[in-house]
Image (cartoon, rainbow, N blue to C red; front, side, top):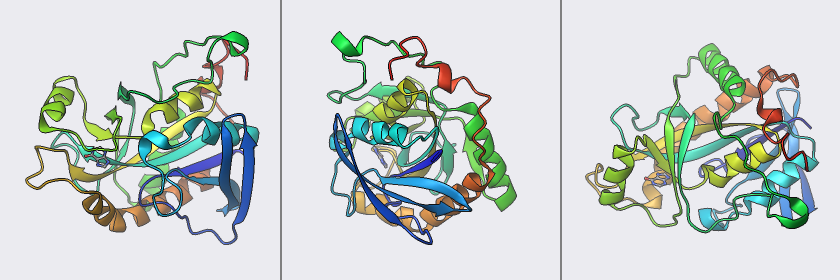
Length: 260
Ligand code: HPA
């Protein structure tokens, strides 16, 4: 299985013809995945927050999830994420392909390389989100008349609380454009395992202090109701175009350690 989808908030399910449930044990814990076919491609699907949004962002077992994907042979990961907007460029309902991140997480396991037997890896993050994969998503979007904005700097906060307006002003002054709670360490771990990773982020709200109303998870979920169908369609058409071939450097990112 070459391809995976990690579904974020609002994309807990993907309509597949037939799902097969699979439980996979990893050194980091057990993971439940679904395996199915989309557009004649075998796809592994992980619901990041579990069914019913049971797992908050800081408690998602990112290492077990990514480890499982690698064990199943996945080389290309398409992730979805809900984000708040820090800039008028990104409006409600926009689909945004991330290209950079600012990491403001605080207490999450960040690496597979914990020293000792596992060694140490300072993985390259010059291009965290695979350029080639983003190109395929852009082509699929174009073929479907779906507008995507390619290239945004994502601020990853620890959550589960939303930000204060003062934090949002700080993130803006640092160049942050959208904010969410999950892309780190997910993208980092994918890179440590040499996988290509892209994030289709959906703008669900204006960030705290920009929005005229207090933020709520309900607002995020409601605004995803329409746009998650667009993202599902975009995922489908992206998957249809994927081939196992890789011309990017993602598989080399972990070569220095070469452990996993
Ligand atoms: N902040 C953090 N995470 C989010 C937001 C937000 O405003 N919207 C959706 N996920």
